[in-house]
Image 1 (tube, rainbow, N blue to C red):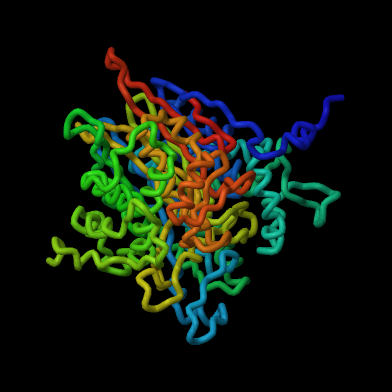
Image 2 (cartoon, rainbow, N blue to C red):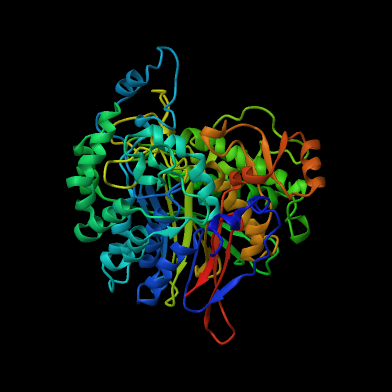
Length: 603
């Protein structure tokens, strides 16, 4: 008789990253899918092989990730993407984030949460009041309609994920860990908890979280996908799914109504103009050497990465910091500059990042302008950490301007198209609330709203909150051709990961895999449920050189080294680079984060 699957994961093999993984860059001329789940990657590869393009494959992967890693992502959450169209050279952005309900006023929610007068309060991550209208379902359909090949239907694109849910699949290591960690939360959140747990007659209630390698089936989630595939957005935002969603939220004291889902059905995802910043390579031989980093504008926090990059660009230009090279990577002076630039940028983002459609006057272009970033760069000292609580600047006062648990993945195709895609519940399974018969959990993105009426990011009806999930895309400064699609998931770690992995490549000569393998730092707790995301603590990942850690401490930083499963703080990233061989053949070169369960897979 064969051994049980559980025998594969006996101690000490269950220890997280007991030995460093050695991964090589993956190359392909036909396209690549890079994500944290092998089975979800196969969903995307199947679509590429069937004639779909990068956008089609991305939606297949998003659905596959919902099946195989529901502890991070799902159709009950939100999505954003950046798409590079090889035929036009254009970068497009799609904001698929949902909004607060029409009755989610500050007064109603503060009263429901029993927030005392005179205190700001906050929306707990596990509260029903953290639920916002899910934007992912509309985002998946809109991605295919706007950027897809037109060769495949939604039924074909979602079919691989549906098969996983109906026939069952073995659960990966990290997914099993996080599923088990939140089993109690799932049980406590709603009466429909059994839909997200594995049947086991010996477990309380006959169900439990699956263990690594065990098979789980998610037939109700597959049923939801079938409805979306057959009926489109209408099948999700009206009818059975919408009714069950509103029913469970209202039963728990929430304020969402069917009218809120109808509003999102009619509004759809929002095409937005991506924002970018040019970063010349100081080691280049001409002024056109370098890259342009593209991000989503607010309500996303991608602007943090652009601001930090702009501050570093100014400091290098002024000679305040050196033009760092390969020998400087992850040294104390190098990380000190990055940490301080990010700290300054977060001070602005914590105030200014909100929904510009509801809070007019978000100064997006001003915040990434050279004069403003030069002014903010004055807060940097190369010899000491800024230990004061930084306040947001006034971008209009500049002399020249007086007038969070997520999945990130990337896909590319044989035509040279590429997509940077991110989908999230926010914290783990989100609120863990499950609409009956639907098989997915509802996100807790509304926890990012402020309950301070004076704050730009204050909760308001039909408003989108400060959003942590950000896809990244890079073009070459010389001719605007594609350089890479990339991202690092993980709450407030995300812009920090963007800056570290991009500079690792541009300044320090790392390949995509090396850039992801390298130990990272994170300012603050990363997620609100783990602590203060704006805390001054610099968390350094296990493996960071000891002399770097001590060097940062000597500069005045409070540094803590994070080990084991705590390293989830530093996110999980993917990078797909685009280059051409000497004979003109296009080559995709990808790296995938060893902190995740997946890899980069060639078509």
